[in-house]
Image (cartoon, rainbow, N blue to C red; front, side, top):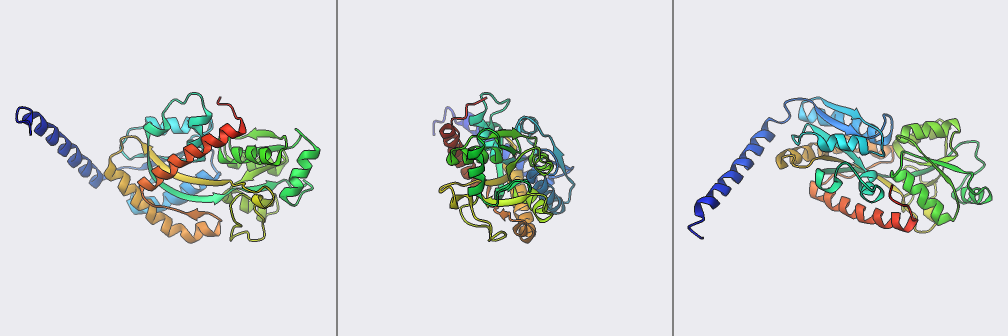
Amino acid sequence: MNYINAPRALLYLAASLSCIAAGAAFAQSYPAKPVRIVVPFSAGGPNDILARAVGIKLGQRLRQQVIVDNRPGGGTIIGTDIAARAPADGYTLLMASTSHAVNPTLKKKLPYDTIKDLDRVILMAKAPNLVVVHPSLPVNSVRQLVALAKSRPGEITFGSGGVGTSTHLAGALFASMAKVKMIHVPFKGGAPATVALISGEITWMFGTFPTTIPHVRAKRVRIVGAGGTKRSPVLPDVPTVAETLPGFESVGWWGVMAPAGTPRPIINRVNAEINGALRDLRQQLLRDGTEPIGGSAADFQAFFDAEVVKWAGIIKDLGIKPN
């Protein structure tokens, strides 16, 4: 050791230990008030449904109220900006999805840096997106939908939960691989898009399991394909899109993030409790066609980094220009 600089080194060490101790003490008293989960979509969509289900279990485990705060708009930008600017104290969490891996490439300028301003907490679940059509549409398969689109170029409309969502990019990828021209109609979440499909405002869409299945059972919409790499055990008779368009895949995912700088002991606590909540909800989620994932914050970080790279490549291949 350089003894001349020893006092300074000791000061740094003391300061670091003090911060660690303060963080640990803060985590022990956490949470002392309600925790908010910002959902950057409207109520009733898959992000909202999962956030509320997990939020109830998380609240029970934390022994504190968990509030779901819907802040739709801007393709998740409005809600995400609110969460990114919130105090990094563990009392604001963000419901994250594919859009958060897409927007760094799709948007020319964001009011926050997704990579630097948000910490990954946990990857909660995944589910294949479903090709659903209005009952009046004369198609019963992906092959028939492609044939209809080719016979009516530029007339078939497909909806999505918003620009840059997994359902938007799935539709764009579908049209590209099928070599057909379709019109994209974005909404402020999966729920309003589904309402538009039921009313006949749009022709078809990629829907998510949580929001789509109840309407399928009520015969308000019809499933003609699934976006997973293999058939869903919940819908074994529904072919995958890849059976018609080899190589196609569209799977939605949902996770939780927190403002950057949230004390690591708190992130670890929230991660552990959500892992427990997912275990409690496992059978319910599987019945709804959603696969609970869980794991560590580092697992989610690695997954998210890979998603950013993957979607950057897809967006480039599709020729979608940043806006």
